[in-house]
View (cartoon, one colour):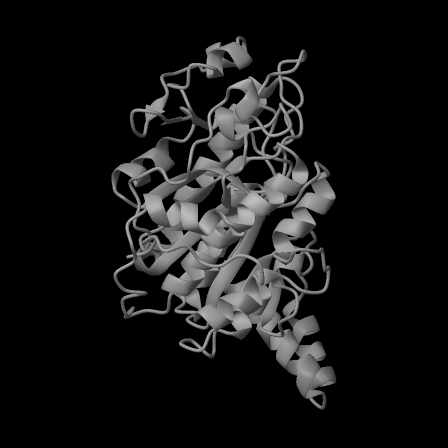
Amino acid sequence: MKRRQFVKMLGASASLVMMQSPVLAAINKSHKKPAKVVWLVLRGGMDSLHTVVPYNDPDYASLRPKLAKTFKNDLLPLNSDFALHPSLKHMHSLYKNKQMMPIVAVGSGYPKRSHFDGQDFLESGLTTMDHDTGWLGRAINLLQVQPNSKALAVANSVPISLRDTEKVSTWYPSNLKDADENIYESLMDLYQEDELLSSRLNEGLNTQDMAGNSKTKKKGKFVDLARACGKLLASNNDTDCAMLEVGGWDTHNNQSFRLARQLTDLDNGIAALQEELADDWQNTVVMVATEFGRTAKENGTGGTDHGTGGAMFMLGGAVNGGKVLGQWPGLKQEQLFEGRDLMPTTSTFSWIATVLQQHWQLSNDDISKVFPSAPAYKVKLTT
């Protein structure tokens, strides 16, 4: 299939999903607590075929004769067609408790295979890249049912996803020695005549207090970032969405070992996030995506190369989980995108739009402002 056909097909995929999915009976139930969203980007291109394994596809083993035999433990069954990588034990338990759903064969519509451009495209949510506006920033600006909601980026600077809003702050652990309390007091005195600087300093100190002591031997370890993120979301009722990111998914070689390690870290991080959210887990949706998938066929160095179609996850107490969504295109040569990649059959952006419409009660008009070319699907994703 050619690129033009691929992009056109993704734009029309909403109708395909409607035919195979249960029709949404009601947009959303009222939440006693604010509806929270966590957006997690896996940077580097996660190999979906080694993560949500299509073990019953007759072409899988022939495309990956070595990788298909490298799983150290039994796959974790999802249904008769798919299983999770054995490292995702906690996520599998969430699936069994109907709080997790994988979505297979997704794509953002980005037609190339560049990491940086692909990530920017995923975060912008537009048909052309715009580094000054992100889909999550636009969405929180439109969040009328929770007008005081704010966003948190667990990062050193505001990522593209959260640009174009003034409701965002950043937090990231530092290995530097904590400043003496007298320094903060001096800064407060210095900034007392400047309302903006004074409020920003207070906001930063409050965020630091809520995050607690998050210093680790290895700065930025995902499980600790996820734990701090959960604590911040649970501690501040006005912070209703957050963005996390984790790199290391570009597995050109030694994929079996490297991906097992990455998935273990991801699984532990999700467990830590859930633990810290506590009761707020029940009103949270965690959306996990990557810029693109990887080649259907393994390469000569025990890995895979940049591809197109991939997988994403929806998790949380507010998720209507326990099922595998998406439309599996098959792995025969003629079914692959450009003869080499998993074919995307639905849009990453439309799945996100569906969550925003149901969980945050955004209208169709709102969704068109967040994702101009990706309408929400009519499938029940949230409780």
